[in-house]
Image (cartoon, rainbow, N blue to C red):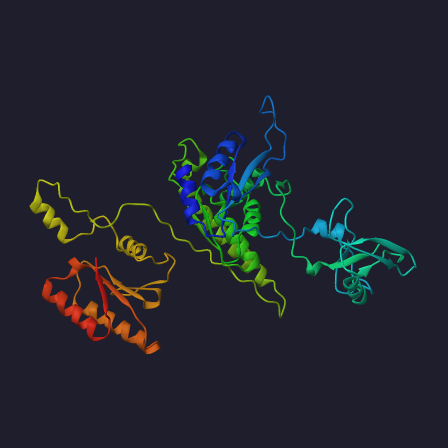
Length: 452
């Protein structure tokens, strides 16, 4: 856990926030570790999520219904978003618009200073429409009160004889802070139902529900955030990101990290062909994405004339497996030096594909793994042509000509366009062919050519 948390802190943006779910047994130890890694000053709260609605008899002492969600900021630059007001709160607290207050739902907010508070406040008399005189310590200076009164933003009660209140309209509300007790969010039972609806089987005992992760995303991210889950499990986070994007038109992206933990051979998941948790998670993302897409297409098919169709979010994803480099290491300790020299002529491992090599190149050049990749007959075009790569085992002048032609086409669009060409060094028959290729690329203006 400690190394992962240190890595998580390094990956967080300066205004980033981390949520860690933990049970009572390890909560105390985890908080001590987090204080060391993130700093005590960056601790926000220990949220108690009511993950189980029923009181079970599986404990001799206390039935555990809640789960801890510990929240830390990366730095004091971070913050949490306000939550939207709930429908129940709006129904209880706001009045409907009327002839006097016409701008929508509204509520009255006291403008008196609470008793016991020292300092601040303004003392003067206010006369209500019914003639009642109120002399209090008010939150606003008299000039500000008169301005609110002139703007029709003061409420004296139904009969005009009550203490004045400031009128706040619903559209003016920015929301409210979340609480540290979440008893109105879906439970693990809903999480299991979501798995069941996708697979017709329950492959996880306690999967997190989508609504829980959506709540976390709403208070901790914006529409363009990147969300990292380094214990992805059933991939609820990926599901929640796609679902939220479909609801608010966001472009959030997710990164799911999960060790290839094997499934129990006696489990239903294993019997269904899923050998590891990762395989279940990948399939869950595929099925959840398709379900979201189908639901939106169904909604769009029922739109009335003039209504705006809903945008289908990006439900695609890529899968990467951590591995060693595709490049052979020089073995200086070998007894067979001649064979080692011969092997180094082709420095790419024999069991690696072109895509394996391609993504390692992207990583080493610090490029986004989501950058657009177009596979042509002779080369890969990366990021709109900023990188042109050929990874064939043999390169002839036809390949070089096609790369040159592509660069000429790009120059027609942007005369200042720059590109980098990456070629496999061992793919040239001899040094003469390699020299001719470099000269040809240089002639069309390609100045940056690298070999692997």
